Length: 78
Image 1 (cartoon, rainbow, N blue to C red):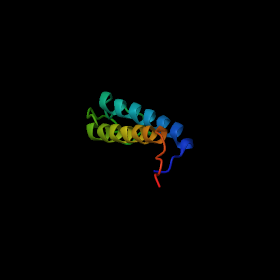
Image 2: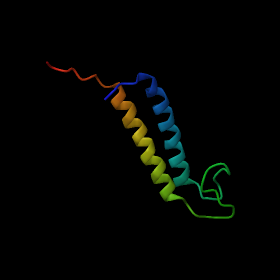
Image 3: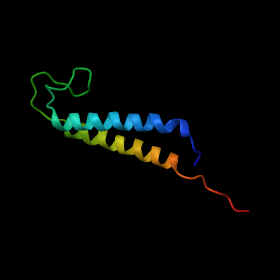
């Protein structure tokens, strides 16, 4: 795998934002979500659990990507 150290910080920041979004989806009702977040429905008491699971999964993917980018490079034996 090609190491790209410049992508570590953006991946961690995106992972943290997606983690916060997942928590927001799990905690807030559709009515309480800000209008710019997908899933906002005025007057709805529904929680968007599937949106929260998707945001959590994407967050974990970002963290795993950043983790693999920090690992050692493979040494080829000849």
